[in-house]
Every structure is written in structure tokens, then in C-alpha cells.
Image 1 (spheres, rainbow, N blue to C red):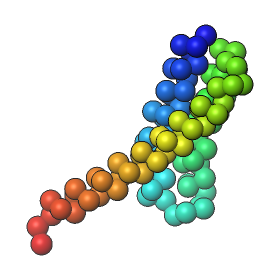
Image 2 (cartoon, rainbow, N blue to C red; image 1 turned 135 degrees about the vertical axis):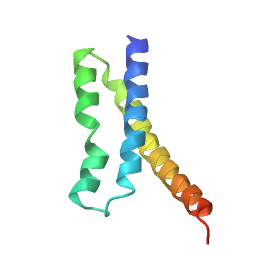
Image 3 (cartoon, helix red, strand yellow; image 1 turned 180 degrees about the horizontal axis):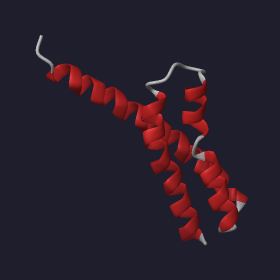
Image 4 (tube, rainbow, N blue to C red; image 1 turned 90 degrees about the vertical axis):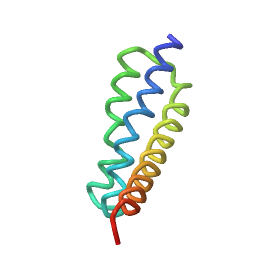
Length: 89
């Protein structure tokens, strides 16, 4: 049970990295921004219910989802920096 809960939490992180990258390209508080933040939630809830994961794992899932969003945003900013450095002036 704990291994399954850990894997679902890891999925919460991994799924939110590309969503965080996408979120950085959208206008704040727009519909796309809202979708980028919340798109992984139905999947995580479905897996939690399917595998009967304890409610005690919810804070871990939320924390890792937020961390994934943050890491995705950082990756996006870093990629933009690298692209702008490679272009000749």
C-alpha cells in the first residue's frame, strides 16, 4: 500500500512538471492557466480512490504537485534563457 501511495505521489510530481511549463506560457488567471494548474487533479483522485490510498497521503500529493508546477516553471525559464543566449546579436 505504501509503495502504491508513493508511486501515485511521484506521478503527481511528474505530471505537473510539463503542466508547470505550459502554465508559464499562459496569461495569469486565464482559462488555460486554470486548466494547467488543475489538469492533474482528476487523475490523482481517480488513482487514490482506485487503489484505496489513505487520506493521510493527500498533503504529500498536493506538496509534490505544487513542487512539480514550480519545477516546470523553472525549467521553462531556464530554457528561455538558454535559447536567448544562443541567438546571435
